[in-house]
Image 1 (cartoon, rainbow over the protein chains, first blue to last red):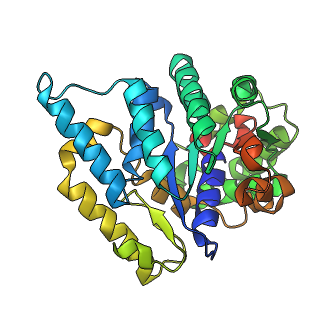
Image 2 (tube, rainbow over the protein chains, first blue to last red):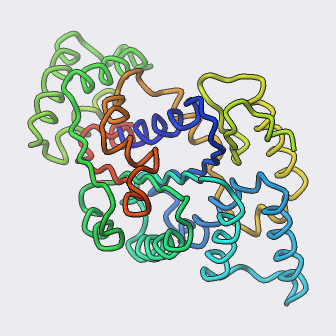
Length: 211
Length: 106
């Protein structure tokens, strides 16, 4: 659902006809790639997407050439990366940065990322950031971005039903499915989720039967 | 550069990112950035080993039409997007229980 919303927002930003010059960068956090998803690497991945202007590219290229001469191309540290992104943002028009599923980051990396983005926003007033995540990261967001907009997402029952129906249609193990199991899935999962009393184990248990 | 001729003036850095309403101009943007990435593989790797390309396309391909579209209509979202709230409203955070998360069910 979060990834869906993130991609919806990104599409909305790019679909809107506007005279305004904007640039968009995005990042989808993934718990399967946690070790690599340091603040430095995430900010680097965002910067990569903003190399759309000659001057931004030139700045990064010259920093790269300089780093290459030192100890055969040493890696970037977080302050260096943040500084490069700040420079890039200063030369760009309005920039939208979308980061999905913050809770899938290791807490240490998450705090470094939020702290870095706070510093970036402090200097770049044309930048807007969209985040999604589980409620547990709300405290951190509120701490780093005191005036930020925080919106809870409560899935609508019919959204859940539609989602389940689509997944069931795409089920490749049709033999393992029966009408009664299908009916149970479509009845129990939306009930539990919309009641917000889902036990963490309930959904995967039912779902695993499909595999 | 070619991207400045884009009708929406929207720039996309990630080579795999595309919009729903793809126009020729959008493709130009993507191509421009492909060239940058192709010509600078060392720099791209130096900046980050992470490559978010493809993920957005996967998610949007699987996305159900209409789900979450209410969010785009909220005053808060419009305020964030339009810059009306100024620097104070620069951050928009959506949170919720993971019960129906795609990642969760997948």
